[in-house]
Length: 180
Image 1 (tube, rainbow, N blue to C red):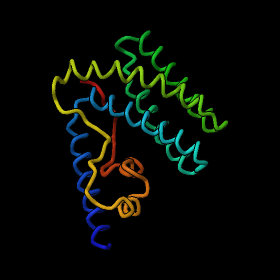
Image 2: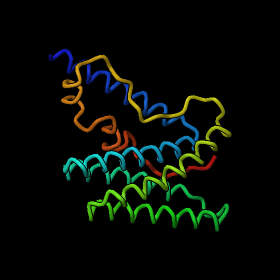
Image 3: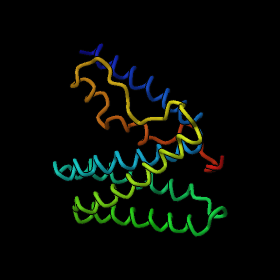
């Protein structure tokens, strides 16, 4: 059993290292798409935890979704197309309000409204990624499934595949330059 936990931890560390490297070398449009994925995945987790009654896990998922949407807001370049970016900023603000409402009022409907908007935007952004990056393998938040007992994986990684997002960056982030 101890070997399985060590194997799970080794696999998780290797995947975390791979993901950090892949993100560091990703094109900025891929990062935006990844932020949509992180927000949507965490909203789905929040809905799951809302149904199960796990308030702490729901709060973690909500926080991660909010942080991803905050990064999307920060990525907007208002000097390029001011009207469009202002509209998008307003839409992101609405999504954040729905996430907060979903958490505060325990409203699956509010979570689903935010998820619906993010899904629509993500689908559109996927086309941008394809046009800009071509057939390049996209960055994914999905961890490969190691061939280990599920119980040992759960004990080794209690915060699931998003554990890497709950920790701070390995190096200081001085700016958020999302330009191409």
